[in-house]
Length: 256
Image (cartoon, rainbow, N blue to C red; front, side, top):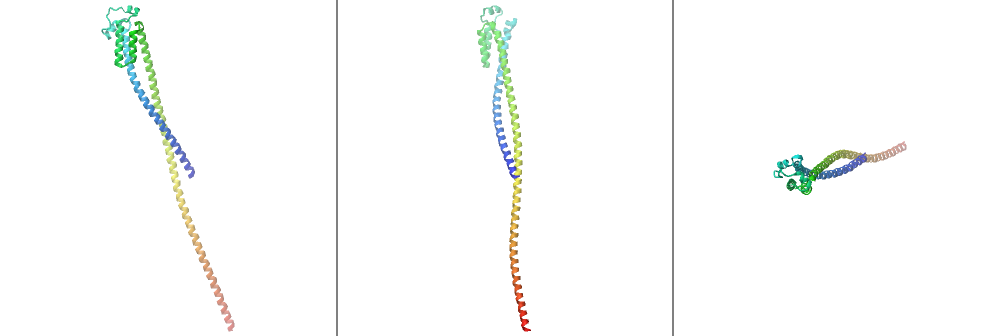
């Protein structure tokens, strides 16, 4: 029974050590993932804020160029963009850069410097260089691209959140296993200690019995020796008595 208990204890301790090591490894991975995701989240939020400002800037540029009120919108957002007498259709067909186009390019360039935005800087260059007929489509395409990037990064952030939650759950499972194995080790240790105590008590009892047995053997040996001496004395007394009786018989016989 003691051997079985010791074996169970050893197995539980081995499992505990392995599970503890696994948990430590999982904790390390979780910490690394958390640090990475924290940094990615901060970067994501920073990029999202920049992207929102980029989109707002580009949409404002689109509004300036929209439909039949191009000149009016230009005056609303950029009061000195153009004079009302500019012939927009002629500028579009000629492919030349209009004052409105130049002012929008400058507007995007200023915002690019203010926001430190590479996207707006490129858009400013495109607006300044491309024919006006292509500018509006280019800006709309850029809006779509920015929104797609925002959605993609949002999906990646969701992956980080899921990964953190999964690793937290794994860590909790490992913690539960460690606690169960620790309880098993404690139980087996207590049982082993109890058996050791019982064995010690039995060993003491056996030693006491052996001592009593040795004492009894010694006593019997002493009694045997005493009895042998008593028997010898009795035999000597009997012989002496027989001799005395013989002497008396002989005396009385001769006297008669």
